[in-house]
Length: 461
Image (cartoon, rainbow, N blue to C red):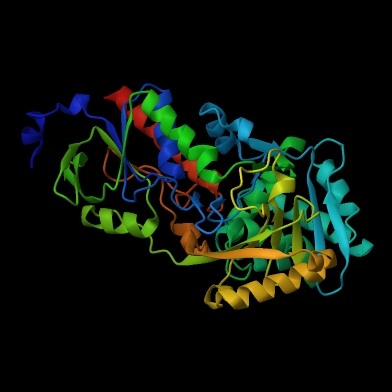
């Protein structure tokens, strides 16, 4: 259908900006555009919004749980602004300062990385200088390594685009124990990939923002509500309250283009929807299928999995709000009732939940549920022997096989920009070239960039 046919139903000037994808990138783009007076239409293929960061009703307990525990930091400026705009910031709980407890499963040693009270970057330096899981001589090594990483990032050294995190740490003189107890937990948590595979550039960006920013930038920030309650519901209300439309179960089949611009999108059922501009906020493989016929080459992505376990107990757990485990399968354990300022509304009668996260779970993704449960419980009991006396009532295992794109150096160099060769088509998603790992912050940052580009083109039209 050419533009002349579409104009009989709706002039191009009156058409909305169409946002393909209702994950966090798509919703954030729609919120930003709605805030700036633009009319939007959000099309989501699934029957629910939220993409890879959502919650669901667990059938046995009736509790709403996340598809995996998510954590943010104070340096997630775009995400925090997004949550503030939709009125969801009250659903967050902040640390008063960076404080990360660790347990080494092999040795049984425990220590907390705790920022000091001085100005940046001395607050984090204070914590590393007193980090008990490193011998004193290696604490200076870690401090010097962090400075070297920061300086490489500051001068935008092209080497960062070509090497892995493992290469970077070796280049910066970090010995095995320093890598394992300081850098690997950060790398795996933020890039969801093994350091021997993951690109150095986004890791250096994390180090710079989190450890060389302000005290507030270094603090962890946690949702105190399930993810869909945290942002999906409020984002939907904001978009619709500003005149936007959200359609779920709307599978986009094709983009209809003429003269290097999109004039409509076609749904699988044949429906044609006029579009003034389009933000494509879908995963890279979906984007690739949609855009390849228009000569836009989205890099082919491999994916890195995350396995999460939610464990229901019948008594309080007495754990820290969250704790890092070193040397096992499980990397992070969250005591949900300790973490949240207000407990969840429970229907199960055994409300004490621990959430366990295994990132870069290339090996564990193939374990059976029983194997995962046994491995995780063994590690929890080794780290916290008192848990042996608490009855476990229920366990669920969540496998996200395509949790994040695997940001290898090759993929990092090929991450596409927001603007495409089609004048009114823009990209958003955690995989777009934001310079950040494929995190919630990357998704929202890309959405803001896409919204800025949409507004700028409107103003120039």
